[in-house]
Image (cartoon, rainbow, N blue to C red; front, side):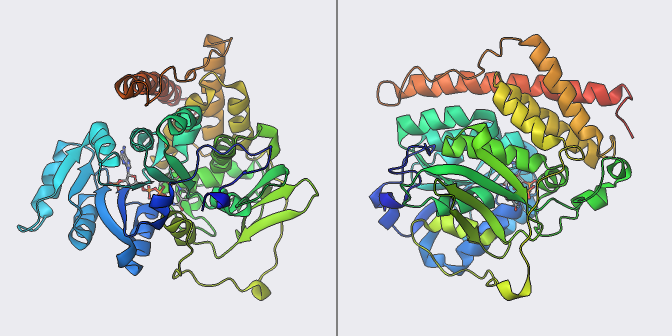
Length: 440
Ligand SMILES: NC(=O)c1ccc[n+]([C@@H]2O[C@H](COP(=O)([O-])OP(=O)(O)OC[C@H]3O[C@@H](n4cnc5c(N)ncnc54)[C@H](OP(=O)(O)O)[C@@H]3O)[C@@H](O)[C@H]2O)c1
């Protein structure tokens, strides 16, 4: 099965991890932990699992505070372990569970990390939203799991670290994000030279609008994605095109290519999920109905292909169109590229500033167009204070083979460094909005 892994035999692709073991590939049911089970990706994943109950055993589910939804899922799948954000949520969850069911209930960042590294689990779906997903992803790769990765922010914040840990522990990463999953499929077993990766973008609800027209758009308009049904944060990221910026960073880390080897094309129909251009200029594309259950099922069952409930795509009913993104109206895409080139923690600053600005926009405390301006301010402030762009996460000094405890400690120190820069950047954005310049 390893022969289906991307980049084998080709000089350009340097995939983030090696393939899962033959044993994992052939072992069913797969013992699965889902981090973020109450979210859009988590619920789609459980829908996939419910259709193929013989293929999966749910060992753990986690949410933040939507305990009613988590309790319903837990009662259906009866995992032995659950995790929530804090003690209040744990108490509320406990009160909702039936008397004959006594799962362990873990809490907080440490709880998510413990769930992600349960010794009985072979597979972890990392689908928490934003920077909060990093702890779970890192715990899963440290524990050598097969990680089905939806949480793109994990790679934006610490892609190099995830790569280093995978090399040390033998963990594998399978990309759930539809664009990266498409590229993964296009590269399966390919040895040819790759010219570039082409990420497609729907263009979001404001495709075609000018910068001036974006000044007064509302939260409700921004949340209305034309093709995909997703959580609030990623929906706003799609409206600003920051989602595509984060995906450029995700592709950079997953496939080990240069920033300039990744092109973005707006494709309003969202049917071509992404493409790979080979040296002979042939294009490989993966197409399908825009429904995340397809990419999720691909990862959870890799290397097998199983039937899903996703409706087949009827290409006679639609035209496929492509154009270049309007970077003047949607500057976030270029800001993400800039941060990726600059290194020195700029991607951490970009991500934190974006998460804070999106939160403030959703709370109607700043305008839609302020999101990009706030991110730029935060990036400029960080560049001024770190002119040499000293790396935030240098390569790991120890490996799991030589000293597993020291490896975990080293990773912990790096995560604290990321968290501290993340917190500083969030504070700056809040301060800027409080000052009134960017508020509504
Ligand atoms: N939705 C998509 O179609 C899609 C596609 C590609 C990639 N992704 C990526 O997948 C990830 C999840 O997206 P989503 O759309 O599924 O998000 P979502 O619907 O907002 O769900 C987020 C999940 O994370 C949990 N969560 C929220 N805050 C948390 C915290 N502080 N600590 C731990 N868990 C927390 C939520 O729990 P509660 O329910 O309790 O709040 C929920 O289970 C994101 O990184 C996104 O970029 C999503």
